[in-house]
Image 1 (cartoon, rainbow, N blue to C red):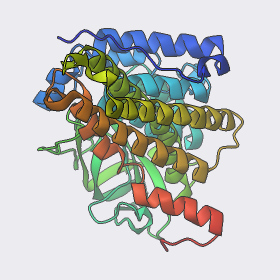
Image 2 (cartoon, rainbow, N blue to C red):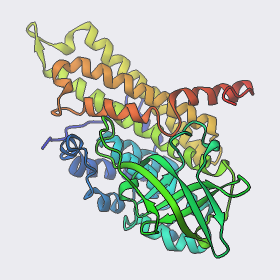
Image 3 (tube, rainbow, N blue to C red):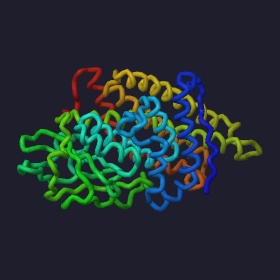
Image 4 (cartoon, one colour):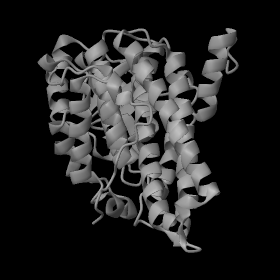
Length: 392
């Protein structure tokens, strides 16, 4: 069991930009992560097992749908609070944050935004308490960056819909109780449907042999003539824009979460460099190590300011898809570079489970790809500034 000595860096006094509620939410989440996540996460990552006991704790601290109104079971917090929670949870582990992101942004968000009142009342409170765990079905074996090409489809059978197809690389799939699945109707229009565990023909095989997100449950969603009640169709919006709006919410959370990873790697490397003696001096006294550490704190500070401003815009409903893409891409790349440099500072110890750096590094290899690949996010920015999409 590892003792968590993490101290968060705040070089530009960003805390002064936060409200008392923001700091309370962040500190509460941070203490929960120190108490419940970091002491056990290395063991679960080594075993490639999701720590299911965290599910209720995440619900208790409000990490499932924190921005969902209280009348539907959420905490009714703003988007900066949501970001700070994702930052602290991903500081513990990207896989645990993935569970929260999927639950909040990809399952609860579309039900709240596009669901009927009956759907909101039926599903959101149980998702908020962790009694239900959700999954989001968009990516398919042959359609990742081009989700509009999906082949999963449903037909109107009169009193129900008949759903066929499959989704892959789905977080929470093996353990989900419901899934928000995006599929094409007979005219080719994309809609969201709520598929429940136990519906005949619905299976969720687990993805094995992952080197990344090992403490997260990943799998497929397979639909073989699944009868979906008509009341399970999300009525509020159709078309590709509906699932993409959910991805905006998830990417926003990732932009914050990546900072948590970077801070953990930096804090670990800084502490180690002051304690590790070589040539009769702590390695923190050497110029090359100071260069690494100084560049780390600089990039973390820039990312903190970037996401804080994005949070303000998100609260004002002014954050654009392109702005969110920029933050996600920048911050994940920043965190991955810091993880690699921190591993160098720790030398051989950096590859062991005694320190979190290698686990973070491997996790980030997934984070830099999911919710839009690193290259696609660059092209989103390119399309935004030139007006010319390069991927169509």
